[in-house]
Image (cartoon, rainbow, N blue to C red; front, side, top):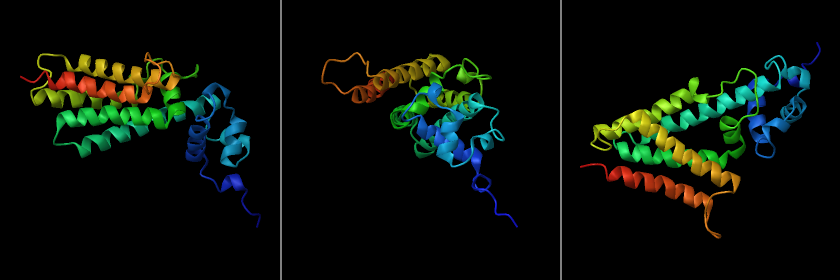
Length: 205
């Protein structure tokens, strides 16, 4: 009996997604080819097409996996801080920055992807990104239940918080943060979270 080929012994779909994430650490998404991914996986390029219609479909799967991982982290943060709403919000902001700084290529693909067939312009229009945003809104509502941020629409607060922390992360990753020479942009991004939380602490009567 003929022995199975190596690419028949690999669980190709999850390995291809994981290897593409790894490739994103060293190159732009637009520069990654199916052959690059096949070489990283250890299979022949045609084998990838049994799982992905093409490069766009593969990058879309990686994009969605990024938000799934972000959602997984948000759920873990919520569980660790179930009894402290404001700490849950603070820890969520810091976890967001860690995600961006530990996976910069994946983070860029999630929020600034190249044109990909079938990918909505707004990632929050679909899950799992939509669930990530819903969790942030839920954290804001939990803070409001404890007396913080009174008389403010929680969706607007969630938009403000995500925009501020995302902006700090993106500027730090691009190396164009508006800081004086010698200041660490990643430390400044962390300080952004702490400053936002200071504003929130002050809203409780």
